[in-house]
Each structure stands twice: as C-alpha cells, then as structure tokens.
Image (cartoon, rainbow, N blue to C red; front, top):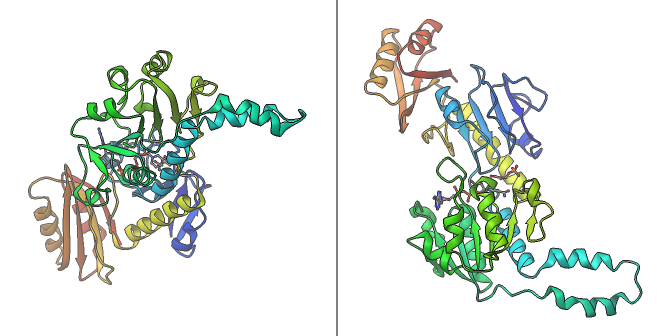
Length: 387
Ligand SMILES: NC(=O)C1=CN([C@@H]2O[C@H](COP(=O)(O)OP(=O)(O)OC[C@H]3O[C@@H](n4cnc5c(N)ncnc54)[C@H](O)[C@@H]3O)[C@@H](O)[C@H]2O)C=CC1
Ligand SMILES: O=C(O)C(=O)COP(=O)(O)O
C-alpha cells in the first residue's frame, strides 16, 4: 500500500487512477507519506521522510516546491505540463478584453443604479464613461512561448491581433505549434516597445524574479495594459506602481494580487483563477495520478522537473530503481555489487540529467537486504527502491 498525502483539494478523478486497494490517498495522512500531490500549497518548510519518493504538482508552476532539496533527497518532482493551459488561455483573453472595455468598472457602476427609476434610460445616459478600445488590430506581446503562451498567441491572432512573442529558450517541438502570424522577437525590447498589451507566461525562479521592473516599464508604450497570469514575483511592485502613476501603464491585470493591489482603480485583481476550471483541475489530477502510479509500479519517470525522463515498460522481473549522482563508474559499482551477490541483470536503463542520474535494473532473482545495503553504501547513491 502506498500512501499519498493531498496537500490541496484535488479533483476526485484521481481515485480512478490510484485504486484504494493499492493506494491510500488522503489529506489526513502524516507528513511521512510515500508521496504528495499538491497544487499551490507551499512545501518549502517541509522536512521530507526517508520513504518519501515523489511529489506531484497537479499544475505547471513548481515554485512552491523546494526542487534542490528534493533532488538532494532523491525525491522525484513531477508537474503536468499543458494540462491547465487552455483554462489560463481563456481567462487571459477574457480578462484582456474586460480590461480594454472597462468591464469591471462598468459592472460596479451598473450596480449603483439598483432601485433607481428608469434604469434603461440611465444606462444609455451613463454608458459613455466606459468606452473602451477593441483589441482587433492592436499588438499583443507574449513573453514566454510555452504551453500557455502559445495558446494565448494563437487565440489572439485568431481575433485579429498582431502578436509578438519572445522566448529565447523556445523548444523545437513548441515552435511547431506557433501560428505563422506570431512574429518572434529576437530581443525583449522589440516586444516592449511595440505592444499595446503585454502578457507574461514564464516560470518564476531566481532568474526571472522582478522580470518586469523599471527599465522594462520605461521601454513600454504609454497606456499599455499588462497582464500577469504567471506569478506575482515576476513584476516588481514598486516599479509597477511608478509606471501606473506616470500613466505608462494604464491597467494591470493580475491573477496574483497582493494587499495594496486589491482596491486600486486601475488594477484588475483576480484571485488566482487561471486553472480553476473543472476541466483543468481534472486534466491536472489525471496526469499527476497517472505519473505517480507509473512511477510507483514501474519506475517510469515522465514530466519530472528534477530527474531525467526514463520510460521503462512493466515487467515481472525484480526491479531495482536507483537515483544517484551522475559520476564516472557509478553504474560499474552498482553492477559489480549486484554480480557479487550472484544476481543476473536481465535488462537495465540508465539516464542522466545534469548532476543526477537514474538507473533501473531488472533482475532474474530477488535481491537480498544485504545486497541492497551494499548498493546504498556506494558513495554517490541517493535513493534505492525495489519494485
Ligand atoms: N494563473 C494560473 O492559474 C496558472 C499560472 N501558471 C504559470 O504560468 C507559467 C507558465 O506555464 P506554462 O506555459 O504551462 O509553462 P511552460 O513551461 O510550458 O512555458 C514556459 C515558457 O517560458 C519560457 N521562458 C523561461 N524563461 C524565460 C525568459 N527569461 N524569457 C522568456 N521566456 C522564458 C520557457 O522557454 C517556456 O517556453 C507557470 O510556470 C506558472 O507559473 C501556469 C498554469 C496556471
Ligand atoms: O499550474 C499552475 O502553475 C497554477 O498556477 C495553477 O495553480 P492551482 O493549481 O490553481 O493552485
């Protein structure tokens, strides 16, 4: 029985993929669970137990997980790339149009007419104060052409916008799905200088914190609308407020508001709803549950943010999975130890990613605790598991 602690509310569809005969999935487990499934709850303060082998982020961003600490401890961190991208894309397009057409202000004003006489006439008389531009023919700058950025770019092209994308790390696979109408900027400045709307779709990490700050705002067009459905820390708040004060930024639309943004007249503050749709929640839960189950039952690793991809088919053999440092002669030492105990390796896989590597051995016979202890004692071995 594997224990999987839920750190957030996760779509119940996970139980279809993690049957209760083999998996105890609950939010009431102790912190020494074999694995965790999480959305946005912070795991930074957690101390992980020796038996913890995986964390599945049912979503895209993993800045709530201490990735380096997990790698040190041989904990595989998964995410679910693309599973909530459509949910975010739809909200970005909707919020962009809402901001341009002054819808939040208009909704609030319409409510003030409640109880007055002749509402239809008052509506006609007052509507002029909310005139707002159409997005067709305007330029949208998309920073980050990953799962979400590409969908936003393509949807914006489809409603007649000119789109400039910027992503110096664009993968070849992703490039295939970008509409031919998206102009790819070589330099961020080109996007900043030409865009009427700018939308952020990059991860938040040490390199991207404060990605938009005073130098970037100063290069933007006057009256630009900036959208942030990625993470709050990507925009330096003091620079943003200065840019709003000077009229450089007309509106800021954010899924990650902090206290001083909540009642600001030119900030559309959304309570992190990008992925909060039944569809996205289900897609993420299914993907996370499948990845955990594959990992527990076969040792397969896909969509990990800290370990190499390694797809190993199910097998009746005794399987030993080993996470270890990516150093010369690690595999040699492991296989020598196995041979010393008279065990034959029927099949094996070995993959690496930076400083870390993963070896999977299929053995013809059961492995003894003594042999396992000897493998664990090899310098550079991080985690050993028998399936
Ligand atoms: N509001 C919400 O509910 C949601 C927010 N997100 C946020 O959106 C982010 C992006 O999500 P996805 O598109 O699914 O991820 P993704 O990994 O598919 O795409 C991220 C893209 O950003 C690019 N990138 C990284 N650093 C960059 C830089 N310095 N300049 C330009 N491009 C850079 C990468 O090359 C990649 O193409 C997530 O990391 C997460 O923080 C994701 C899902 C839901
Ligand atoms: O997937 C992401 O990165 C998100 O921001 C979605 O977060 P959530 O799962 O809604 O807490």
